Image (cartoon, rainbow, N blue to C red; front, side):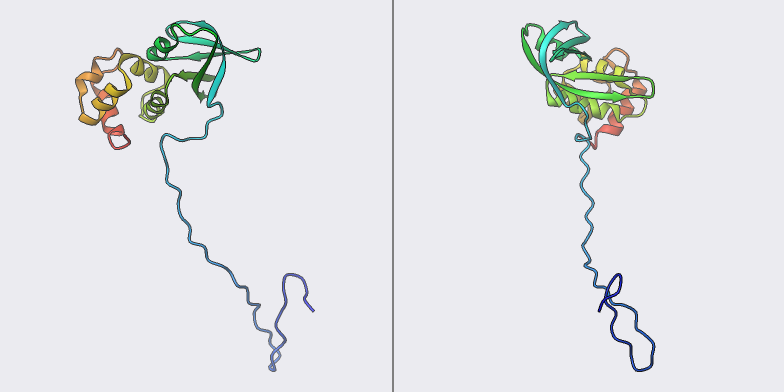
Length: 173
């Protein structure tokens, strides 16, 4: 008969019971690879009617709820002539005092936005400004080649910030 957690072997002749034997299967632990582009996203995209647009913001009506999204200039150019239903990729930035939605026309824009947020000293507004000042291919090239002049030509980006962007993102691209 078994009692409680498991069966104990019969007592030995000396009267002392041996410790119970538990067989454990050892499974090797593998650390999952981290992809800097894939993070937990609460709102990944929105599909709805484009209600209002300006070079910095759009409002999308999704089943009666209007979402205000801050966007970079290339995204505005993509939606400049859009009428009716649109699909926009999003990033939800959560702070203590606010939750902000940012919208992007392409996956490349959103991925670069997330990478720029990982650089110390760069917030969402500056990241949008950088994406508005240079296209995604140009930004990737500037970072990979270490072109400080291309980054400092963007409004709001000084020499130290450009060097920090290159230093921190060169290995991540």
